[in-house]
Image 1: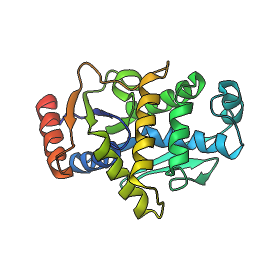
Image 2: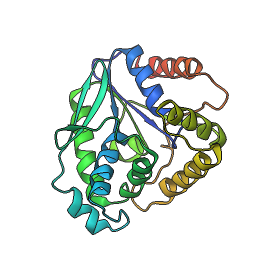
Image 3: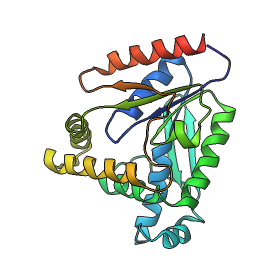
Image 4: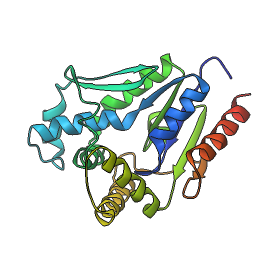
Length: 224
C-alpha cells in the first residue's frame, strides 16, 4: 500500500459505514474518522441549548463557540464537546436526526470540512459519512458507496439501539431511516449522493466479513 492514503465511505443511514470503516482501517493498519460524529456533536450542542435546528442563524449562534475535538487512536475515535467526552451521548436517534438537519447549515459544514481535510492530510485514514467522496474529500484515493435496502438498515439500527438500551419498534426505526434518507438526499448543501468514481457495495445480503473482503480487494487493486 502507498505511504499515505485516504479512503472515503459514503452511504445512507444504517448501511454499516462506521462498522465497515473500523474493520477496514483495522485490516489496513490505518486510522478511522467518523465525520458523522462531528455533526452529531454540534447537533447535541444546539439541542442542549434548546435551539430550533431548522433556524440556521440560531444554529450558527449556538455552535459557533463550541469546541469539537476528536482523538483518533488504535482504540478508535473519541469525540469531545467543549472538553466533555460525548462519544456515547451523540448516539441517540434524536441527535442523529439533528445531525442530518444541521448538515444543511453552510457554516457548520465549512467548519467541519476544514477539520476533516486537515486530519486527512496528516494521516492515512478511512473516513465515513454522507458526502465524504463528493464534497469533503473529493480527491480521496479510494471511494466506496455502501448501501442496503431500507428494511435491512432499519433492522440493523433497531438491534444496535436495543443493545444500548434504547427501545423502538421496527416500524418507528424504519420511518426514521426513510425520513433521514429523504432529508439527506434533498438538502441544498452537499446532499447524499454517490460519487461518480465510487465503488458501490450493496450489503443487504452480505455479512460484514463479505463486505470487508470486497473492500480490501478494491483497495489493493487501486493502490497497488
